[in-house]
Amino acid sequence: MAENNAAEAPAKKGKLKLIIMLVIIIVLAVGLSVVGTLWFLGDGLPGSDSEDGSNGAPAEPAFVASSYTDIEKALVTTVQAQGRQRYAQVYVSFEAKDPAALQAAETHMPLIRSQLVMVLGGQDFMELQTPEGRRALAQAMLDRVNQVLAQESEPAIDRVLFRNFVVQ
Image 1 (cartoon, rainbow, N blue to C red):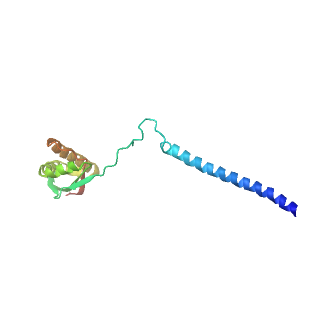
Image 2: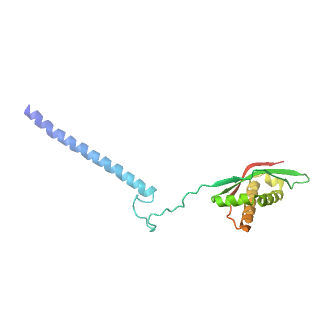
Image 3: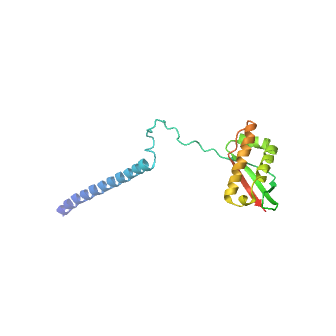
């Protein structure tokens, strides 16, 4: 009986050592995989110094939300067509990162509306029916609005957006 207890004690000690060794190996494997993932997919380990000496300064600029303003009334004008009189009706919005640019656009809205109607009226009817033609119109309108704002020494807007676009 005493011999049976003595034989079981070394067997339990051996299994306990084996379990502890396996747990240590698994913990090390998980830790190394996490460190490896951070190293290869990220920009090094958290808290480590960067190589370019930027001292932890963010590489990307901070996110700045855009602001929008609408031209309340539609821009309506005739457009060039082959022998027929065609109409275009466009509802326009402006996008800018700088709220001062939108405030300036609202201040000079009568001049901007006049210029945008002239830009829209100078377009070809067939071109306005294609996505490329509409993108070109948006760019031409953006250029004209920014030209007006530059003449008034105001900040520029970033984009012209169409809320509704009808040609007939």
